[in-house]
View 1: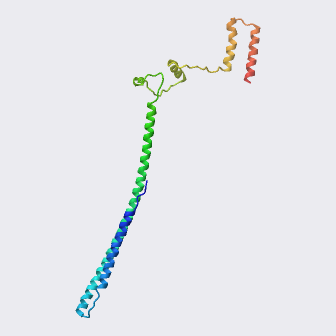
View 2: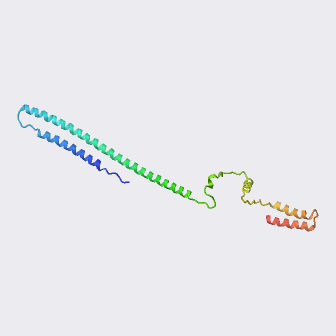
View 3: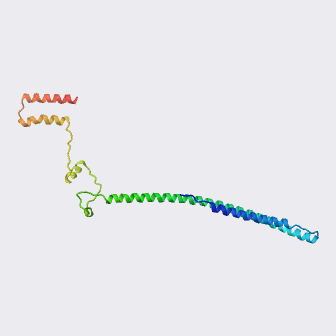
Length: 204
């Protein structure tokens, strides 16, 4: 932002000081011109009284003029401070307006892009009567989540927990007996021992 000039205040200050100096010079010249020319005692007393009053008036005038000068200097100083504050406030306001304008433009650009999005395969206005609700669903267990996903038609692969070594031994041991009945042959016992030995090697 362009800074404001202080030319007008400086000119007014100089003009006031010039007027004060002119008044002081005029009072001094009047006091110097009124000197007694005659030797008459009454006139001398009269002129002495006039000169005394003139000196007192000049003294009072100079004091008043000095006070006026001080007041003018104070006013000019306060005006300069006020101008600096106004400039700082205008700078902040201008920066804030620029930020607001940028935010508005970004929002309008985003709205324009969202409104111009096309989804092929969906008819125009189909989303107006949509009754779908988006929310957060918390499942208490994996089984509940799996059942809900299967219900919704989402393909789910259920992974079983790996069986322990004891379960594998029992399964492999009882499978031949179930197939062959209750009869046990020496070969089946040998089979069992070899399998058990193999599992022990795996365990170690």
